[in-house]
Length: 110
Image 1 (tube, rainbow, N blue to C red):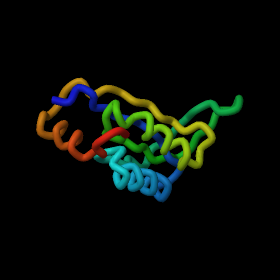
Image 2: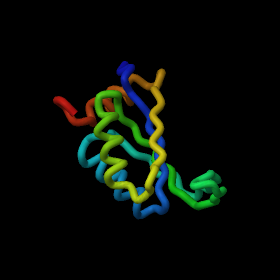
Image 3: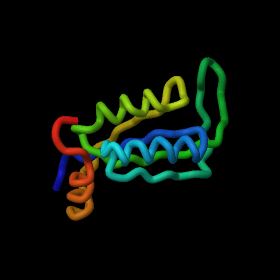
Image 4: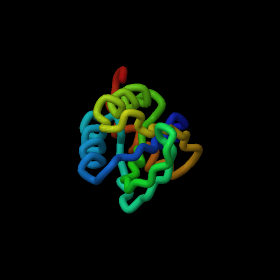
């Protein structure tokens, strides 16, 4: 089992942006899979004001080795000034799925 596997959460303002980000991350093999969860409402404080917006949640599966380039890619391609990018370790799961995850990422130095 690959103990370096991660789930990264990010949000996007709409489906078009979320799909473009997801497709790029998977095509570049920085992510094995990205799930898009629509219909989400976010309430947050930004620049001293409380905002309420519809967003799309990206649930990105990757590993520790690909985290830095994944973060850089999201920051460079994201329309938000300060995009949410939160990484959490995967502490267990299906060995077959985690093996697939690892084999779906770019090999060599990321």
